Length: 131
Image (tube, rainbow, N blue to C red; front, side, top):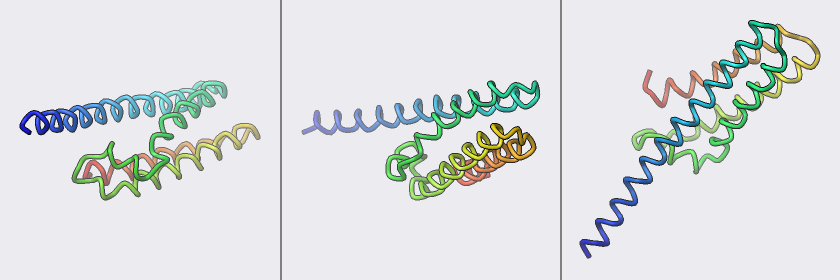
């Protein structure tokens, strides 16, 4: 019986560590995408903007399932998974809007969509990190 408890505890702890590593890798990918979009605007390089948006969308996909999102949040914040889920939807919408505006060469509108992405990130972080 002790062995079963030890194994169960080990599994729970390793799942928590894996969730932390997944979240760190995901946020790193999100930051890389945001950075590339920013550089693309600074250097007037639409291809860099598009590749940055692709990175953002890939990282954002982790939060498309509200229930699955819970396991990546701190235990005391898991009941707020809807905030991460809604932020992910906002990021998706703004990412798509950015690409549409970019195709039309509406750079100010595209940059506003970039700001919307950052604002969605900040709204989620404010809650999850307790800012």
